[in-house]
Image 1 (cartoon, helix red, strand yellow):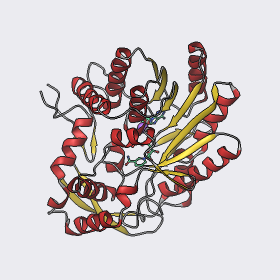
Image 2 (cartoon, helix red, strand yellow):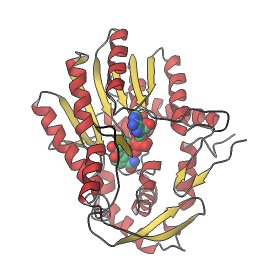
Image 3 (tube, rainbow, N blue to C red):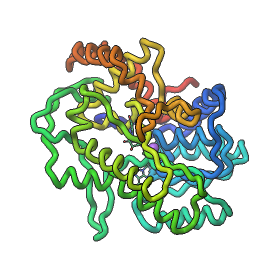
Length: 365
Ligand code: NAI
Ligand code: NA
């Protein structure tokens, strides 16, 4: 019997069987929807969780023949159950085998040159070229060219921002004040979460001649609203997203079919980890649930590949329901009702249950 090990806003372990069950359920739901556009040979950077995993599963659903994934996960050992992403990736392989889909996953640092070479050798060994490249990394560290560790920080760029942060371990919220990121912290966050590595991946793949002529590439972004702008759009992560959007433009001018997909905010390990975002994502989920409009990450990616994103300029938008004026008003009201002691307006129990399910806990049976 494996019990969840929760620290702060992070679930640190997983239930292997539960992860298989969770992904199996998502697969069933996906198969009940109409199939979307078919890509044959898919690369997913950040394949084991969140948008990357959901993209890989959606392309499997739509009939892809092969996929290569890259992720950075903790395998199971004698003393630890392993990270959820490790088991969700295994679960993906189980489903892929049933579909006669050839899948290879590299558990390797996607920021390293040698990982690019492994992927290139593998797609060549398949005798294929990629017609879809998904860039969906969410990382906190990378090594710079000199081998020094740089860290991303998710902070506002103005001082003294206050708000609630969640403590899932003790089922409480607490008031938190955030310092402003300094220029170096912003630069490091842009280096990790901006467009640099997306561009270098696509260039390396093109140089190795493993992209088909009509290859599409997606990178996932978030814009949000004035309710979370101080901590997101105007903060260090927003600066990284801005850089990534500019990179997309550069890539297109170099002949790549590269698009930014603006997704809705989700309750995930990544979003709950962002200080002051937790109340917003929880209020959003409650508000969309009340309207029967809630989408999880798998719903969002099914919609993307079914052509359901709204083209706005160069952006593909999946955040239309979130940004509707009445939904935003509802979120604002729910956040205003919240305090450290009172959080009925957000269905806290439902959020926690969803997060635990993604780690294979609390599922039926
Ligand atoms: P996630 O944390 O669920 O997944 C991140 C993936 O990156 C995992 O597969 C992980 O193993 C992999 N990874 C991390 N570091 C790595 C490394 N060094 N080498 C190889 N793989 C590595 O994150 P999520 O939420 O799916 O985020 C993906 C993208 O979507 C990000 O750009 C994020 O900003 C964006 N996004 C997220 C939203 C949210 O609400 N979670 C909303 C809109 C966009
Ligand atoms: Na991902």
